[in-house]
Every structure is written in C-alpha cells, then in structure tokens.
Image (cartoon, rainbow, N blue to C red):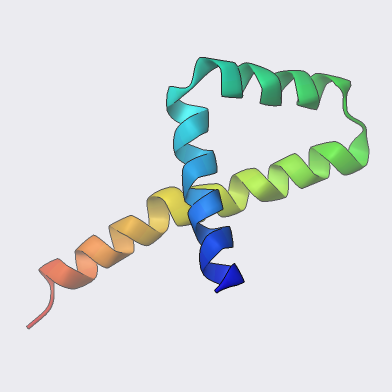
Length: 68
C-alpha cells in the first residue's frame, strides 16, 4: 500500500510542478540553496515523477489502444 501512495505522490509532484507556480518557485529556491545531496535528491525525484506522471500513463493508454 505504501508503494501505491508513493506512486501517487510522484504523479502529483510532476503535475504540481507543471501547473503550480508557487510549488515550482519553492523547488527552484531549494535547488539554488541546496548542496550536492539536495540537488541529487531533486534530480531523482524529478526523474521518478516524470516517469510516473508522463511515461506510465502513456504506456497504459498505448496498451489499451493496442489491446486485441
């Protein structure tokens, strides 16, 4: 169950970053003030959220379209 909640969090993280200006500004400020560890965490979190927020839904849609 906790894995599902984490996936929902990554999905929300991506779309909040795209559409919410305050959320985006906070992340940019965290990037500017953070060190190597914080920036590495942001890169990993951004990568996972892109995979879950964009790639996974596209794969699901493609699998439904090509379903026999």
